[in-house]
Image (cartoon, rainbow, N blue to C red; front, side, top):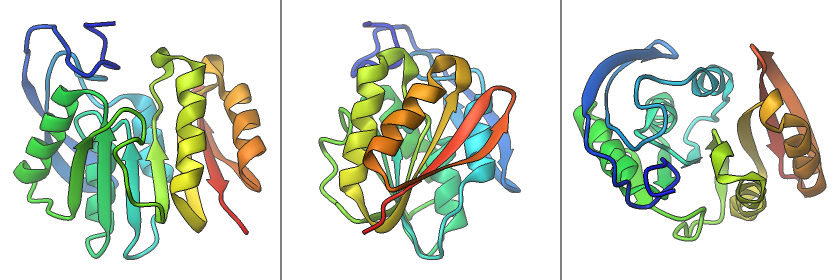
Length: 200
């Protein structure tokens, strides 16, 4: 696992690149590197999630497994009067997200290195977003769902993107065991977007 993106300290040699991306009509310049998820460009699943996610005005948002930042930084741009916390186990991803926030003039973000949600103290997020680390295994993904439930306020929502072939049916079943309402918001090229609502 040492050279895999789901690792706290990737050992693979650096290979930094910068690219422009337009997400939800927002132009971002994003630096990537070897040893982080989808280093050659924003993956299709993240794009589907970014296009689907709904963020209330002033929302407090958590991006779990932020990588170099496309989901969380787009969210921060969409809620300039809110705040986005971005977490990743991978220290290289965390440093890139910080660099990309600064490079794009985004100040309403906090980026933390965290194994799952262990370093996240806030327990009343409005929205949690995740393109979960499928290659880390089903147990890890399901733990993210459990911890996300505990970190949402009542009325908050967890948004997930997952491929059908990578476990969407079991992910939905796990979500339905935790949340009162789980909706399939959209599907695109085998990707499913689920919105799980935490209700009283």
